[in-house]
Amino acid sequence: MAINNPTEIQKYQALVVLHGIKFLLKTGHPINTAYTEKNLAATASMFTGMDYKKGQLKDAVADLRLWFSDICNHTVDDEQIEYPED
Image (cartoon, rainbow, N blue to C red; front, side):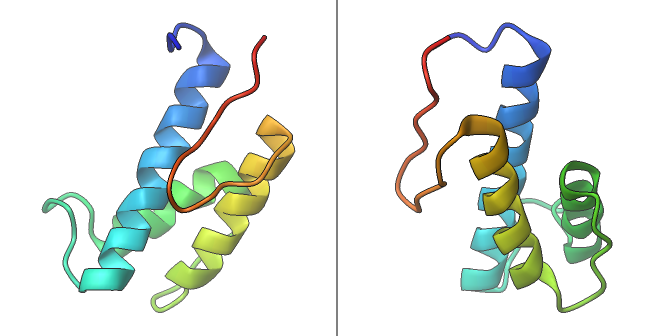
C-alpha cells in the first residue's frame, strides 16, 4: 500500500509514535535520542488532543489505539496494522 495522501501519512506517523512508546515502555530505552518520554507524549498529544504528563505513556497508548479505531474503523493489534482499502 502506498502512503501518498495526508491521511495515510498521518496514520503512519501515529503508528510510528505508538510503537516508539510501546518500545520505551517495554525496554526502558528510547528507539533513538529524539524519542524521549517528553517528545513521545507531546507527539501523541497532537493526534489524540490529550495532554500527557510524565508517567502517562500507557494512557497515550490506549488513546492512540482509540484514535486508530476511529480513523481506520478497526482496532490496532500489537503484531500488525491493516488499513482498509479505499
